[in-house]
Length: 114
Length: 112
Image (tube, rainbow over all chains, first blue to last red; front, side, top):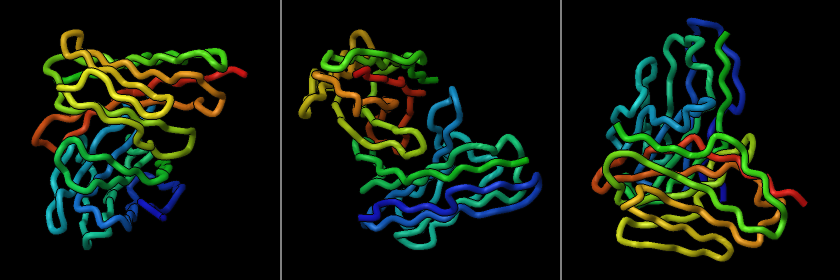
């Protein structure tokens, strides 16, 4: 089972460049999420999509945009990368967005902005 | 705002002993509390969920307790093994919302 697959695994960007992180899940889940993980900060929610066709802001949405392309895919875009966006990004999915659901995470994307 | 506290210092224990990790939170109690395991360079993996009306949950060598009076969850690994070495995250979830609040995790090292 592939579960949640995200690409790329590693990326180095220059300040001001743009890029898109891709994510796909094969578990037929309704809800998908993008988190970032920084040392000492824990996982913080950037954006989420409760179901196909909907997206909403999480805790730290500034500087990011998302697209729920279909039920399987949820992409995260950095329009103008900043050093503060250097982080590890995790895509995740769950059957529903309501609490109590298990969240399945991808393997992470390491992004460095220089 | 809600805060979660997990020991930031690593916990080292001897193989075969019981490891106990702590998750404390402030403010109001969540409807659900989850524990995840994260290995270096990998994404978190779900381990256990406990609801606010449950005192204890077990799965094989794992046990989670939830004390809403103390605002605390304890995560136990009995008969610990070196393969249990990882970072363990707790996450709170509130009824009717999408939001999961994650702690920073505690790194566990089981010594052979």
